Image (cartoon, rainbow, N blue to C red):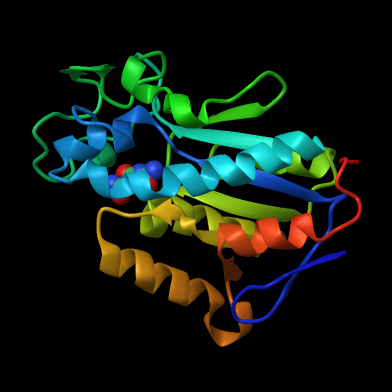
Amino acid sequence: MITVKADPFAFPLDPDHVALLCIDFQRDFMEAGGFGESLGNDVSTLRTAIEPTRGVLAEFRRRGWPVIHTREGHRPDLADLFPAKRDRGNPSLRIGEEGPMGRLLVRGSAGHEIIPELAPVEGEVVLDKPGKGSFYATDLETILRARGITQLVVTGVTTEVCVQSTAREANDRGFECLVLADCTSSYFPEFHESALRMFSAQGAIVGWVGQSGQLLDALGATEDGAGR
Ligand code: TIU
Protein backbone atom coordinates (compact mmCIF):
# COMPACT_ATOMS: atom_id res chain seq x y z
CA MET A 1 0.00 0.00 0.00
CA ILE A 2 1.29 3.44 -0.93
CA THR A 3 0.07 6.40 1.13
CA VAL A 4 -0.87 9.42 -1.00
CA LYS A 5 -1.60 12.74 0.67
CA ALA A 6 -5.14 13.80 -0.20
CA ASP A 7 -8.31 15.36 1.14
CA PRO A 8 -9.99 14.64 3.46
CA PHE A 9 -7.33 12.08 4.52
CA ALA A 10 -4.57 10.01 2.94
CA PHE A 11 -5.49 7.74 0.02
CA PRO A 12 -4.22 4.16 0.49
CA LEU A 13 -3.16 3.38 -3.08
CA ASP A 14 -2.96 -0.32 -3.87
CA PRO A 15 -0.44 -0.78 -6.72
CA ASP A 16 -1.94 -4.13 -7.71
CA HIS A 17 -5.49 -2.90 -8.09
CA VAL A 18 -5.32 0.67 -9.39
CA ALA A 19 -5.97 2.13 -12.85
CA LEU A 20 -5.69 5.60 -14.32
CA LEU A 21 -8.87 6.97 -15.86
CA CYS A 22 -8.50 9.80 -18.41
CA ILE A 23 -11.96 11.14 -19.09
CA ASP A 24 -12.90 12.81 -22.38
CA PHE A 25 -9.66 14.66 -23.17
CA GLN A 26 -11.10 15.12 -26.67
CA ARG A 27 -10.53 17.83 -29.21
CA ASP A 28 -14.30 18.45 -29.16
CA PHE A 29 -14.04 19.74 -25.59
CA MET A 30 -10.52 21.16 -25.55
CA GLU A 31 -10.03 22.85 -28.92
CA ALA A 32 -11.66 25.70 -30.81
CA GLY A 33 -14.37 24.66 -33.25
CA GLY A 34 -15.59 21.70 -31.20
CA PHE A 35 -18.64 20.80 -29.17
CA GLY A 36 -17.52 22.70 -26.06
CA GLU A 37 -17.14 25.92 -27.97
CA SER A 38 -20.48 25.39 -29.73
CA LEU A 39 -22.08 25.57 -26.28
CA GLY A 40 -20.60 29.03 -25.80
CA ASN A 41 -17.60 28.07 -23.68
CA ASP A 42 -14.04 29.43 -23.65
CA VAL A 43 -12.27 26.11 -24.23
CA SER A 44 -8.82 27.47 -23.34
CA THR A 45 -9.74 27.12 -19.64
CA LEU A 46 -9.42 23.34 -19.90
CA ARG A 47 -5.79 23.32 -20.96
CA THR A 48 -4.40 23.59 -17.41
CA ALA A 49 -5.14 19.89 -16.93
CA ILE A 50 -2.95 18.72 -19.82
CA GLU A 51 0.57 18.94 -18.38
CA PRO A 52 -0.23 17.51 -14.93
CA THR A 53 -2.08 14.61 -16.57
CA ARG A 54 0.85 13.99 -18.90
CA GLY A 55 3.06 13.55 -15.85
CA VAL A 56 0.74 11.03 -14.22
CA LEU A 57 0.18 9.19 -17.50
CA ALA A 58 3.93 8.87 -17.99
CA GLU A 59 4.35 7.38 -14.50
CA PHE A 60 1.53 4.85 -14.98
CA ARG A 61 3.06 3.84 -18.32
CA ARG A 62 6.53 3.56 -16.81
CA ARG A 63 5.17 1.23 -14.15
CA GLY A 64 3.01 -0.76 -16.58
CA TRP A 65 -0.15 0.09 -14.63
CA PRO A 66 -3.47 0.06 -16.50
CA VAL A 67 -4.68 3.19 -18.26
CA ILE A 68 -8.21 3.71 -19.56
CA HIS A 69 -9.25 6.59 -21.80
CA THR A 70 -12.88 7.53 -22.34
CA ARG A 71 -14.49 9.48 -25.16
CA GLU A 72 -17.97 10.97 -25.19
CA GLY A 73 -19.63 10.63 -28.56
CA HIS A 74 -22.20 8.99 -30.75
CA ARG A 75 -22.62 6.54 -33.60
CA PRO A 76 -22.46 8.18 -37.04
CA ASP A 77 -26.16 7.39 -37.56
CA LEU A 78 -26.90 9.04 -34.18
CA ALA A 79 -29.00 6.01 -33.22
CA ASP A 80 -27.69 6.33 -29.64
CA LEU A 81 -28.39 10.06 -29.31
CA PHE A 82 -31.45 10.94 -27.26
CA PRO A 83 -33.47 13.85 -28.68
CA ALA A 84 -33.32 15.28 -25.14
CA LYS A 85 -29.52 15.60 -25.50
CA ARG A 86 -29.52 16.70 -29.14
CA ASP A 87 -32.16 19.40 -28.75
CA ARG A 88 -31.10 20.88 -25.41
CA GLY A 89 -30.27 24.59 -25.40
CA ASN A 90 -29.36 26.75 -28.33
CA PRO A 91 -25.82 25.80 -29.41
CA SER A 92 -24.19 27.28 -32.53
CA LEU A 93 -23.93 23.69 -33.84
CA ARG A 94 -25.75 20.58 -32.65
CA ILE A 95 -24.30 17.11 -32.10
CA GLY A 96 -23.90 15.43 -35.49
CA GLU A 97 -23.62 18.69 -37.44
CA GLU A 98 -20.54 19.46 -39.50
CA GLY A 99 -17.95 21.69 -37.81
CA PRO A 100 -14.33 22.59 -38.54
CA MET A 101 -13.21 19.26 -36.97
CA GLY A 102 -15.92 17.16 -38.61
CA ARG A 103 -19.27 16.15 -37.18
CA LEU A 104 -19.62 17.25 -33.57
CA LEU A 105 -19.27 14.49 -30.98
CA VAL A 106 -19.51 11.75 -33.60
CA ARG A 107 -17.22 8.72 -33.48
CA GLY A 108 -14.69 8.83 -36.28
CA SER A 109 -14.62 12.62 -36.54
CA ALA A 110 -11.36 14.48 -35.92
CA GLY A 111 -12.98 16.40 -33.08
CA HIS A 112 -13.96 13.18 -31.33
CA GLU A 113 -10.30 12.11 -31.04
CA ILE A 114 -8.28 12.51 -27.87
CA ILE A 115 -5.89 15.49 -28.01
CA PRO A 116 -2.42 14.51 -29.23
CA GLU A 117 -0.76 15.48 -25.92
CA LEU A 118 -2.68 12.71 -24.12
CA ALA A 119 -3.27 10.27 -26.96
CA PRO A 120 -3.63 6.59 -26.04
CA VAL A 121 -0.82 4.15 -26.80
CA GLU A 122 -0.96 0.48 -27.74
CA GLY A 123 -2.46 -1.65 -25.00
CA GLU A 124 -4.52 1.07 -23.34
CA VAL A 125 -8.29 0.75 -23.25
CA VAL A 126 -10.26 3.38 -25.19
CA LEU A 127 -13.88 3.39 -24.13
CA ASP A 128 -16.60 5.14 -26.12
CA LYS A 129 -19.63 6.32 -24.19
CA PRO A 130 -22.82 8.08 -25.21
CA GLY A 131 -23.41 9.86 -21.90
CA LYS A 132 -21.67 11.82 -19.21
CA GLY A 133 -20.97 8.94 -16.85
CA SER A 134 -18.38 6.42 -18.03
CA PHE A 135 -20.35 3.45 -16.68
CA TYR A 136 -23.65 4.28 -18.38
CA ALA A 137 -24.22 2.09 -21.48
CA THR A 138 -20.59 0.90 -21.56
CA ASP A 139 -18.61 -2.20 -20.50
CA LEU A 140 -16.31 -0.24 -18.17
CA GLU A 141 -17.39 -2.09 -15.04
CA THR A 142 -16.76 -5.45 -16.72
CA ILE A 143 -13.33 -4.32 -17.89
CA LEU A 144 -12.35 -3.12 -14.41
CA ARG A 145 -13.64 -6.21 -12.62
CA ALA A 146 -12.00 -8.54 -15.14
CA ARG A 147 -8.64 -6.98 -14.26
CA GLY A 148 -9.29 -6.91 -10.52
CA ILE A 149 -9.19 -3.13 -10.43
CA THR A 150 -10.76 -1.61 -7.32
CA GLN A 151 -9.24 1.88 -7.34
CA LEU A 152 -9.30 4.65 -9.91
CA VAL A 153 -7.03 7.66 -10.19
CA VAL A 154 -9.35 10.05 -12.00
CA THR A 155 -8.35 12.78 -14.46
CA GLY A 156 -10.31 14.48 -17.22
CA VAL A 157 -12.77 17.10 -18.34
CA THR A 158 -15.01 18.62 -17.33
CA THR A 159 -14.86 18.40 -13.55
CA GLU A 160 -18.51 18.93 -12.77
CA VAL A 161 -19.92 17.11 -15.80
CA CYS A 162 -18.29 13.88 -17.00
CA VAL A 163 -15.73 13.60 -14.19
CA GLN A 164 -18.36 14.12 -11.52
CA SER A 165 -20.84 11.70 -13.09
CA THR A 166 -18.15 9.06 -13.46
CA ALA A 167 -16.77 9.45 -9.94
CA ARG A 168 -20.27 9.10 -8.50
CA GLU A 169 -21.05 6.06 -10.64
CA ALA A 170 -17.73 4.48 -9.63
CA ASN A 171 -18.28 5.19 -5.95
CA ASP A 172 -21.70 3.55 -6.02
CA ARG A 173 -20.12 0.46 -7.58
CA GLY A 174 -17.57 0.18 -4.79
CA PHE A 175 -14.55 1.61 -6.59
CA GLU A 176 -12.33 4.01 -4.61
CA CYS A 177 -11.57 7.19 -6.54
CA LEU A 178 -8.67 9.57 -6.10
CA VAL A 179 -9.58 12.60 -8.20
CA LEU A 180 -6.53 14.69 -9.10
CA ALA A 181 -7.62 18.32 -8.88
CA ASP A 182 -4.97 19.74 -11.23
CA CYS A 183 -5.63 16.98 -13.79
CA THR A 184 -9.26 18.02 -14.10
CA SER A 185 -10.70 21.27 -15.37
CA SER A 186 -13.95 23.04 -16.15
CA TYR A 187 -15.18 25.91 -18.28
CA PHE A 188 -16.43 27.31 -14.95
CA PRO A 189 -13.75 27.69 -12.23
CA GLU A 190 -16.37 27.93 -9.51
CA PHE A 191 -17.98 24.65 -10.61
CA HIS A 192 -14.54 22.99 -10.65
CA GLU A 193 -13.89 24.06 -7.06
CA SER A 194 -17.39 23.15 -5.87
CA ALA A 195 -17.35 19.70 -7.48
CA LEU A 196 -13.99 18.86 -5.92
CA ARG A 197 -15.20 19.99 -2.51
CA MET A 198 -18.34 17.87 -2.88
CA PHE A 199 -16.29 14.73 -3.62
CA SER A 200 -14.17 14.88 -0.48
CA ALA A 201 -16.70 16.40 1.93
CA GLN A 202 -18.42 14.29 4.57
CA GLY A 203 -15.47 11.93 4.95
CA ALA A 204 -14.84 11.39 1.22
CA ILE A 205 -18.51 10.78 0.47
CA VAL A 206 -17.68 10.41 -3.27
CA GLY A 207 -13.91 10.06 -3.13
CA TRP A 208 -10.54 11.57 -2.31
CA VAL A 209 -9.14 14.72 -3.91
CA GLY A 210 -5.41 15.21 -4.34
CA GLN A 211 -2.84 16.84 -6.60
CA SER A 212 -0.72 15.12 -9.24
CA GLY A 213 2.41 16.22 -7.36
CA GLN A 214 1.23 14.47 -4.20
CA LEU A 215 0.66 11.25 -6.14
CA LEU A 216 3.98 11.45 -7.94
CA ASP A 217 5.79 12.25 -4.68
CA ALA A 218 4.26 9.19 -3.09
CA LEU A 219 5.19 7.00 -6.04
CA GLY A 220 8.70 8.40 -6.18
CA ALA A 221 9.12 7.59 -2.51
CA THR A 222 8.38 3.92 -3.00
CA GLU A 223 11.07 1.32 -3.56
CA ASP A 224 9.00 -0.64 -6.05
CA GLY A 225 9.50 1.77 -8.93
CA ALA A 226 9.82 -0.80 -11.66
CA GLY A 227 6.17 -1.71 -12.00
CA ARG A 228 4.37 -4.90 -11.20
N1 TIU B 1 -20.25 20.58 -21.35
C1 TIU B 1 -19.42 20.05 -20.49
O1 TIU B 1 -18.93 20.70 -19.56
N2 TIU B 1 -19.06 18.73 -20.60
C2 TIU B 1 -19.58 17.80 -21.43
O2 TIU B 1 -20.52 18.04 -22.18
N3 TIU B 1 -18.97 16.57 -21.44
C3 TIU B 1 -17.89 16.25 -20.61
O3 TIU B 1 -17.72 16.79 -19.53
N4 TIU B 1 -17.05 15.33 -21.07
